[in-house]
Length: 149
Image (cartoon, rainbow, N blue to C red):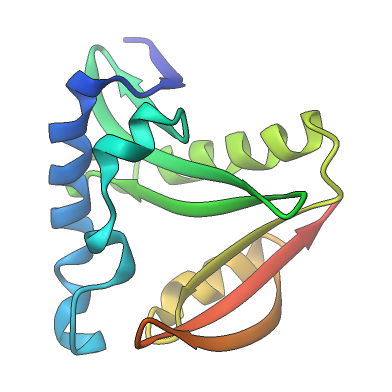
């Protein structure tokens, strides 16, 4: 069965929202509130062309939000459906984001995660991302990371 990454459409929004709910709800207790990705308007992000989905046999298994901010590509969000985790889809989406940055001529790709999501910080570090700074935004304690090409 084929796997592809494509721009999200309006019909993908319910799947994206379900993945967000399932992927980020477990962090509510750890953070003490909903993580930032649970507060996003995915319909609007899809309309502006900022969301791409990983589609396997017609089913959305994951998604990525990539933003152009201040001349840099920002990996704003990446999530995989819990039932599809462990199949390498997160790695495919990360590889895709990094290739998009390279193809567009960006010298680096940036991302951030909540400081309590220590497993994400470790994963990004293994992929070559380095911490650039920490900040509190909208009450969320974020760790900013970057990978240079």
